[in-house]
Image 1 (cartoon, rainbow, N blue to C red):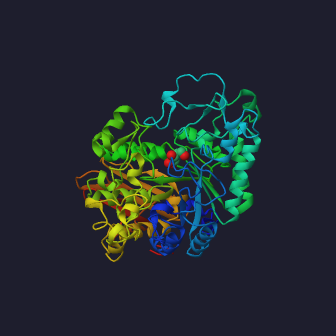
Image 2: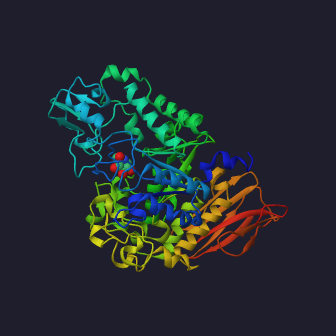
Image 3: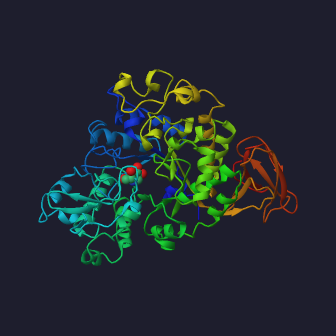
Length: 559
Ligand code: NOJ
């Protein structure tokens, strides 16, 4: 391994930033964000240190699921701009050192998609097999629905033909049938189109559901003996077309099953997977002030190919799902961070952003982001996290966390100059409103959360061992302290995080180190000598955090 490998496998040390064009920046004053607005904000994102933008769905949509119900896989929602505007964004982002990936939502289409319109018109339609149908009345599938507030079955009767179609999500999102070779070709063709326009890959939506074939006709399922073969084909297609494009998969499954979606140690399926298990364990750890659950999750990650990568995150655009915790554990997290039933959703998650969950305590918020960026993997931010935005519980369901980006303290948070009532979604009001939380104020304040995030991102990028290295826990006498190291080549980064309110003295013993080594602080000034047995003691405030680089006397690395 050489430092230059970090450019080939760029995703292993990337900083990913997820945004929805429609809520990011409105440049034509119509109340809806647009590509022109995003273009104006690319320098901000580059300055933050982002290296990869993840665009939430920007395609034409029936808008039942905030763009995740697509009516044209080749289009751009005209409210956001044109293909030309998108290409300008991609090109400018590239110039600023950022790649762009986009949501690929191919488990389903909208029921308004021309394919489905044709498919439901007749059993003889050439598009009929693009979807999954059953002629006999379905059994009770109420326990299998993803959105239990709106659905009670994964089958919906289509009146025209008297048959039922499969929909894992809303009934307006019929599932595509990937056992049909034409559907598989269409998916690859759409991917090829966007790659040709300059995208560097995709965030693949709902991958386990996409590969799932149990609802399909047995004969059809036999035509696709191993759905993972389809994923392998898509991965090699992206590789052939771009050389370095990635597939970042949404696979909320237990670690051993996630390993299968990486393609095991061959690493020939999804390039990256969100580590949902560690994310959920993080919240349990925070609720208990006990590093144990997070430590257990991180050490239980299965071995994967050196080319593969875990994507780490604190929040995303969906509910903070806690579905992989036990009922008791989930209740603990609910009690700590969202006791009001209105803060909870689907019986499994929270529809809140991090700062309000932590009562706005800046020490805890910073500690959590310090932890995120110091964990082995590639960090993914959801827009607004860098300035500590809050949620709007008055909005429906998951929309609570999808409010407009807060740029200034001006009306509409500087997101749009349209009249307030015309905004695509209201701006947050109250203590987390733009008067108190906005980019403009924080940019000029060296003590702001934004300035702190920039520092974390800069240090993360300076420590490729975080993306590439071998992770190891450093044993602790304190349950509330997580101490870990990432080692790669001649670089070792040590992170210590105090999840509790009590100050702690943290003893460390570092293997293969002696008094010719020292620990250089990376987030503050300071250096700590190591004993001839590689030991040191570090002081941590309540909710304190430190990043330390192990430096040997003869190291040529820039400190
Ligand atoms: C996962 C996406 O993150 C979510 O927002 C969407 O509703 C479902 N997939 C369906 O596409």
